[in-house]
Length: 506
Image (tube, rainbow, N blue to C red; front, side):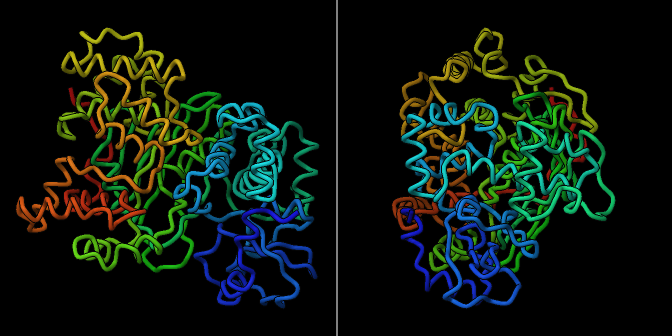
């Protein structure tokens, strides 16, 4: 069966990318070699196979379903995801994000289909047509990748690895690893070096270059919530509220500015339950905007008279994502019409009163962010903010807790915006900021944002030219979110913006 996306993969263009070992296409398509029975990423350093011996596939799962094994040299499963998913926000892209978060492992295909608003049968047809594999095969490929990383980087027993990766049994784990990698778990582990202990998982998260890691760190450090997040020189850490229990993640970020390569962000996870490994990894990747194609973004913005010089100064700038959509929306409401410092102080008080205290090994990280159900029961008059904003926050929390507004990565962006605007106290700025951060929308611009106007004034624009720039922002499509971040970055202090342990601001 030829899939819709395979028909869009022009074989000659794909082969040119393979012959040039172009890393920009890693994660966009996969190359399968008939004579060896393996599949590779486009940048695989092995000898380039003959054109007549290769086929091209839109997903690793599709290559596996066609009977190919993963290349042991280039590890084709360990690539950034396709940037197409966030740009198009198609059903396939939304499904891939939820599968990566472990929804199929926890809720089955029926749960995935329910979240996307389709029947399981119709969703399977859509994914087969678009990606060459159904939801079970796509989830299986994701489990195999997670298992390989855990085998190679931790001292976990194989049974622990199996359940941490999402497999239902050790036998299923063994069979899948042998089929995908043509090696047993013991052979994959081999003689690897020092590894972390039980409950702690250290991974390298792949991102495309250029990667402006310090600018991303500066943004996150500037918006820290006391008790939930801390940052220091070259690193950021926070709590995670995961399906099976709490956890923490510590990310080490630096600049990798050479374009067209794959860089790695070291992530250390401390998890209450190893079954949350897949979800924790995906949430860290969302925070990093790891699947962005920075070369495409930079080329599009390079010639713009306003954003072009900023794009040249900060190549590889990312849009900071989130680890929990509900948290992002609540923090956005708190931040309406107040300074960043003021929002941080108020949010810290909210966390201290309504957040759940957890034990962590990261100094200064003490609480989970309050969940929507807890805040939905709060008295607006007792919240540390103006009464009207408190009412808006409680109404939003109630809508999130009831499922009337869903902010996971499977939600339809237009539908979310419509539902948010229907809530009292939620205006266009709030709805669009939520789309930017919570839904990873790459094409959001906030023309009324005070930060945008201050940035443009700092670049020498008076009121008249400022209005002209805002009016002409359509030319930044489909990457207006990145243009917005370039403007905001002119206002950011150098990273880290805070001490390694941030005291509560009360």
